[in-house]
Image (tube, rainbow over all chains, first blue to last red):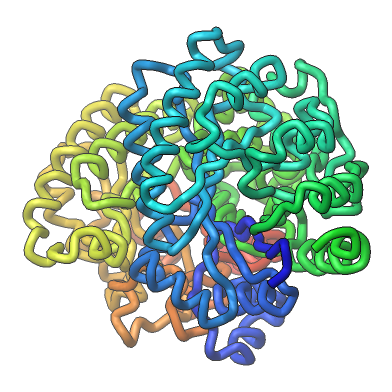
Length: 307
Length: 318
């Protein structure tokens, strides 16, 4: 068993079919590449063929995904038959800084944990609040309230065999001034951390320094590259900055940006990281191409350092 | 038929389903490049979906709700002026469907969220100067059945709740001067002629929408439906299809993408089996002069669909 196993955070948007059994007929319907991107059977085969044996579910897909398969358990079995296991799900802990939304945030967090358990997953990568714009800056009390919610959800998750990992976005209300304060305000036994390599770099953290400082808290990763580290407040605090007006990409395939991912892998080796790592391609114009490029970079540049 | 007045629905941009580079649909630049192309294809009026999901997702580049419009253009008036500068003279109508809210077994959540966001959609329609809000009164039957497996025994309850919710929306629509029209997709709890009792229970100002493809798939002649209900028709969607529902696809969780078949429900106007020319002629003979919209929903090539639709309409021009 390798030290690191690789998964994909699912950014396929809505996949309308379980399985296309009549692929040739489908192709001749319009003679485009639509069929290649329309069913879970094919998507999971891409993953399996490229050595991504895990998938992290996106919560915004559940409304379509669950009825399509009938249940979370059915999807997990379908994926497993194709060599892919569900490792977890992303979760947005909306309004967790606000005491008035405490019950709602806890309830939503517990429901997400229950959902992950049905999929057979192990991780819940959890964004601790919503966007900075309209919410930030957070007071010291609001950061502590957020930590309280994370601890509570973390306790429930731990009891159900699931690790929650804080997952910070560069545009979140928890931002550079209080990022580390939140981590250090949570219980290390209950709340872990998922490093989204590009998000924290854009926010202003140095990737390798951050990992060195918090290596014992890291549950998993969202691995991706960026060429836009250290964005100013005016960008991070803007309204909905993730999708840019002009099509600028924040996120790139590993090796296509400027992050010191080789330095990170040397640190992973030093600290003997073991576990799952999700690769994330949000913003990619072609997820299959991104997946193949990532596999090439992993095999030729990163895995020789540590795997 | 005056084809110059026919609107094109922006549902031809498939925001939800995967294809390479679908992400570009979430950026402002994509839409702002699209408007002149719509005008170049001969359409000066559009219909827009109202989709709260883009508000939740923080993707304000998609101009499909008031939050996004306000985020990018400050207000609806600025956005309308921008559209006009790019050859789009008017937003004819807004569409709204509640599938997003059928996600658990809490019926109060479904009707509460549908009513709340349907009301927002009405306000948005008024601000956009739209003639109508076309609302789907039901989520997919199959999606309802996922969370309410006893739905066949609870139709009366769902119908009562639907009428109550729509009645509130109709009241607001009347105040705003927007016509509320009811869609009757073939996958709905109130498909085809089952929409009639719902409409009968509502205020007189509530009208019916005609979706020609959906009626066709449901085994109802669009011509007969139009002729029987012409006095209460508030909008007509000229949609096309080649789909035949042989296996009760309408009851499945994702009926817009029939499992096991390559053919989607909708095809680009003019490439399916619906006699759109005959329907246009019938509307003329019946002196229908309400909104007419072409929809290339589910198209696999929106830019080709725009031109295919224009090519069809040229054959209808007198």
